Image 1 (cartoon, rainbow, N blue to C red):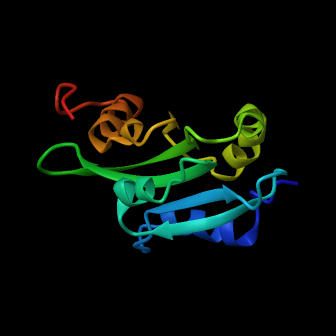
Image 2 (image 1 turned 135 degrees about the vertical axis):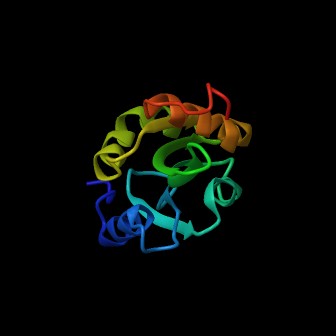
Length: 146
């Protein structure tokens, strides 16, 4: 078992999804250089940019983030994105196993509108992610503009 369903990961996931908690992201990392054991490595209230600043170029990691954006002047939408991060210095065998091992993470962090496969922190530009969330969410009140 990978540990993706560990109590601390489930609690962090529930906190990110809760409208009553300020936590808006979590990060799951591998517990060691070998094996598939996962652990909650960070969580915070600073959104996608704070999550991105915690990513390690030498690791594969999984992030989950709450993204809020305005539909129009009257309403806000809340959507969730699953980030599958493979840093450029991640070992080859770890990279190869992510496609298999990410399944356990996807089952635990099941409620997300989009999955973002990121290799570089520029893949996590908030404007680009909001555009993707708008497309995934149906109605677009801004004519496709982010």
